[in-house]
Amino acid sequence: MSDWILSIAGTPQGALWASVLALVSAIAHAGFGALQKGRHDPWMIRGAIDGWLVVISAPVALFLVPWPTPQTFAILAGALGIHFAYKLSVALAYERAAFTVVYPMIRGTGPLVTVIAASLLFEELFTPMQWLGVACLSGGMALLALRNMAADAVDPEGVRRGLVFALIGGLLVALYTVYDAWGIRQSADPFTFLAWFFFITALDFPVLAWIRYRRLGAPGGVASLLRRGLAGALIAWVSFGGVMLATRLDKVGEAAVLRETSTVWAALIGWFILGETVGPRRLLLMGLIALGAVIVEFGG
Image (cartoon, rainbow, N blue to C red):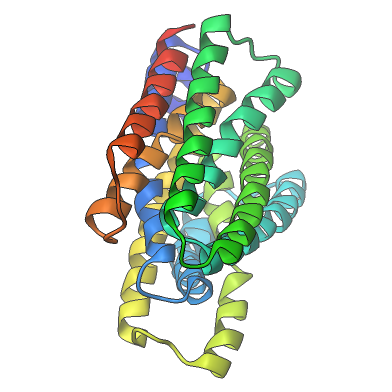
């Protein structure tokens, strides 16, 4: 599989597979985000997800893929710090504001900054039409978050604080997307990087979740928490693994933009599953987000 991935990287076939992986990653990530904002405390659910990621990824990393080089271990150490900061900002945002307010802001900031960074670091070129698509997508997400904030009058101050953490999270999304894309390109075997990435970057939040559990217990039940954690870990492999492979196969910027159609799916999850309100204005903005992704994909 690794040889096939490397053989099609940078080819039209690789570009097609990158688009497919990015879109699958988008759908998966919407579900992943909803798990963190659903029934359980966001710190504990993230800890449960990461705990299962360690359990699932350890045998793959230790026995099924080639071992990383010292350089790859150093890159993974950097990824641990970046992803810890990202997970911290997301947990703080989800504590303070509704899922449909926080999620679009986090994901909307990321692609714009990622495209700029990828243009500078990887020398990726976007056409004026594609830049228009990026503007539609990121602008639509920002307007969606603001529209949802205006509708949430329960705790305006909490919502504003949640948006600050969401903005920080969005900047960290851009940072980890570019950093992870660089990291997986430095590894001779992409699946070595993925397996060790999931193992190493998941070691932090189980500790925080355990400390929180000792103090507060587990509202919603331990069994439910563990079931959702397992589901989240499996989704994470699809979501984060899919987009990282997409950045290995083709342009980092395009993969980042396509992945952020997750906001549309997240809004639908918030509407149908979490019971959050979605009106005609939100539907219009969701359409703008989807249109932006289409323009980026076909405007090159």
